[in-house]
Every structure is written in structure tokens, then in C-alpha cells.
Length: 197
Image 1: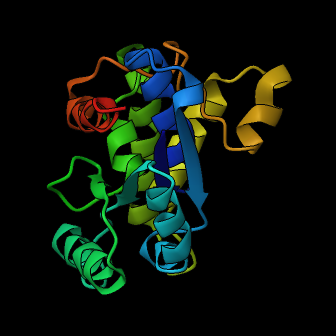
Image 2: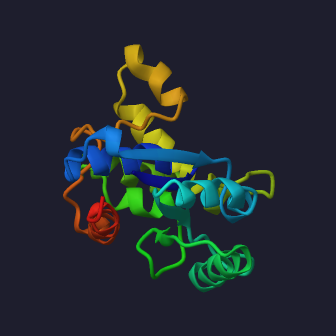
């Protein structure tokens, strides 16, 4: 079985890619949602060891985030140190693409249904307006807000309860393009992880 330790809302995207893109039955994988990134992973070495002892293949998917405290290079080093210090064996992928700084939201921006690009353009215009008119009292929205606004705008009122639970409808082509070139690296990584199962 594949045991995937993932950060935050990454869980729903990984599930969608495994089931929809790779046609993997949900009985062959389990996704363990970490409360956060690297700091949360550092709290579960015993669980990972138990997975390894049970013959499960362990994989970790986290955000690379940005320097100075994170970033692709820093998180890779932290993961390698963690593996060595705890004598653990697992492969990992850092979002958005396993070579740049960034996070899930950076990847999602590249996966939107192109028919809805105008929503991002409007949001960007809103942020630009805030920047121009900022008197020091405004806090500019974070990337998560942009993604939430995108999904919220497309979600009918009778489905908003799912959005509030973090379900961003990753399996729905109305929202997302699971054939986007931007996710090829992640899909290839997942494909390699399930190859030997």
C-alpha cells in the first residue's frame, strides 16, 4: 500500500490525481494529512517507521515554500537530514514542481480551467488596486485567498458547504485541468510511487 504524507489541502489534489489521472483504486493508497509542513512531519517518525515495517511504500508531498526559512533547497536538506537522523526510507516531492520555491497554490494557479482565466485577472486587478491605494491599513490577500475566491466564485450556493471543508472540486473539469503540463512532474512522481505496489 502507498502511504502518502501530505500537507494541508494537498490531500484532495493527490487523491484526485491518483484516482482520476492514474486510475488507481483507493484501496491501494492512504493519504495522511499533516497539520502543516516540515514541522508536522518531524512529529511522526514512529508512524513512518511502522508503515515501513508493515511493508508500505511511504512518500511525502510538501510545499517547498520560500526562503529564508524554507524554499526548495532548504526543505530538501531538512528532509534528507530527517531521513538520515531517524533512519527512514521514503521519497518526496516538493510543490509546486520539485525544483522551484512555492506551494500548492502556485501549482493550482497553473491548473485552472482556462475558460475562467478572467476570474484570476479580476482578482489580480483587485490586489493591484489595494497596492496602489494602500494607506498602510490594508493587508494584501495571500495566495490561498485567490484560490479560495476562484473556487468560491464557481461553486453554486448549494455546494458551498463542501468548499468550507476544503473540498476544492479537484475532480471537476469545470474548475481544474488535470491534463495541465504543470502537473506532469507530480503525476510522474506518483506513477513511480505506485509502480511497485
